[in-house]
Picture 1 (cartoon, rainbow, N blue to C red):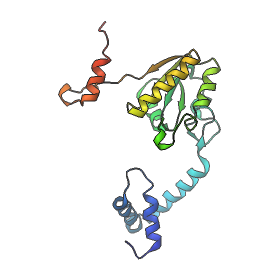
Picture 2: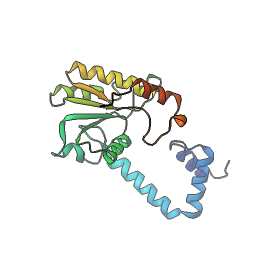
Picture 3: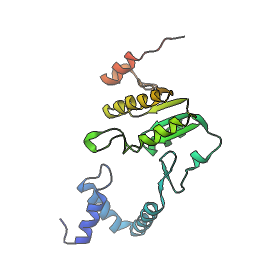
Picture 4: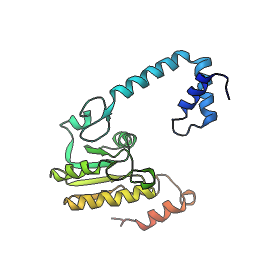
Length: 199
């Protein structure tokens, strides 16, 4: 590949990013070395700093520089609503797209035995203790509509019911502005099966 062991190591290191294969990593490495050495140094410094200073919130498990993140520390949030998401990216999406003012719990994954992700790795014991505190009245399950996401949603519903907490699931179905002929069969079948009464 390359006569430079250091360049090979850089390319290999870039492959840790999602969706980045060998060719893409090679293009990135060459671009950084050819045109963006200053940017590469800034990137390296921010990566080192982020890895050293960003941990997880002790309450919701999202990424945070503090022991308790800003959302968990806020007194303006509704303690009776708890939204469970798979990742901090999902939490950000809900915050930006909705008026949700409740609390969050970030699992940092979904149940996936093949990937070694079980209830312990997702912090579901922490979630169960939180539900046991008696403040949460509704657990909003916002997992992705994948096989693993559905299995996780079912498991979360069981935990909620064990603690006398109402469990709800984000609606799935047709996208706003979508046309039936262009919607995939699985989405259409799910939307058809979950149809609502017009009032």
